[in-house]
Length: 246
Length: 246
DNA sequence: GCCGTCGTTCGGTGCGGGGCGAACGGTGAC
DNA sequence: GTCACCGTTCGCCCCGCACCGAACGACGGC
Image 1 (tube, rainbow over the protein chains, first blue to last red):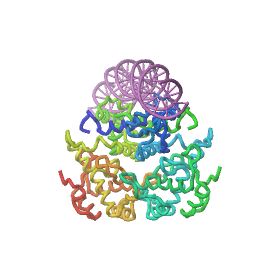
Image 2: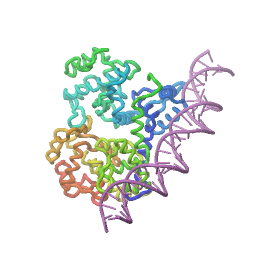
Image 3: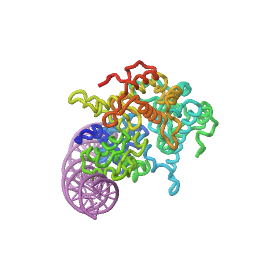
Image 4: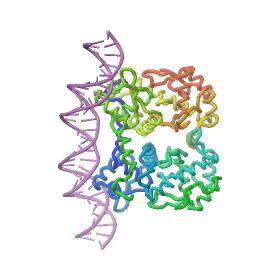
């Protein structure tokens, strides 16, 4: 409050960062990349309905801003989110946009892809959707995760994950928290993210407890997975995916 | 990935939200309001160095976007952050802007107000700066706060706060977490936010353990406060504010 | 009552940037 | 080598919007 030349030194940086997502095309690109997969420029251009040249400029700005990184692979270049930090950033921002996604209710029904996504999906690198929220709730009820005084694993939670084969220690040079709350887009409730969430997702997929369906972002628990998760989490079977199969 | 008419229904909302902060003037306004105090339009216009008419338009956009709310009081209208959600949003975004604030190192030295702010300040409604980080570290070392498996208070932490007179239960109709990690701008390390952080800040100020200095955002621990905090936190005196008095 | 202040609204101006098409280079397939 | 394709760069247009000055309503002080 002492000068009117430059109000706040951080304002320009904040504006620049926000400006990266302030365009609808760039926002759509970041949302599309939330599943951690790399995409080509042409693919994203088609997806967003803009010319390849336009998409090229957008991608350059996102890369310069540090949100995306390029990956050359043979003939064409791919682009993906820069890392967990960037993913968490987009996640948090997207989660704050409450209205448009939820409760379509009347009017047209969500198509099958949307229903599969609502049931279960990966959010960057951890489980989300009803499946992710259900597992998080079960862990909380079982005393593995405490949400009452914050959001952290308990000793039981660490033991359960390591017992399943999770690698919770090997995270060099990372400021990523072990457990982090991530607000679910469709459920509007928190689910487990962070290193523990990523390891859990990896384990569940590796063990065949869940499989990717559709384009690869939607995730569906297998009968084996429901049985095993229900057993090790100590919850009644059938509560993990109330909608049954479809 | 099924249509190229509208890439993602959430993209427009995300872009609109980001667009609110994508302008340097609006970003400066939001940062200036982070201390929870209400300001008049003219005040903010002078602060940012723009005409009152320009500021009026910016404030209207921020209010329409839900980040700010107006408050009429007598002759002039005030504006402030809409609530804890909005504050947390701006905080998180600002914390992600790493470079500009820290390590000015060479060139011109930070003036006294900046030094006072670095020592201790309020971040919306909780303690920040070296004071906030030091208290958070002490609580962690004392087993009141666990950061190794997430970010949550322990029973000891809840007991300490309630023993000081904190009201951790009375939070009706709020999705605000009890303990939340907030990345410090100057220290680049997490400090305690959420309901517990707000209560702690209130207690520390009420008991005269710290006082607001300067414009009211900077906070300075009193000798009494250092002594009492060191005693109840079980840490050696003098570690809370290494720089001593100035 | 009149005046000063504060805040908003209304034209008008200029710049930034999102969009496109066309042209250019780099890579793998033939 | 030649071709096809992908991605980028360049010139261009135009819409959006940040900014201002001036004018207008609202309220409290005198």
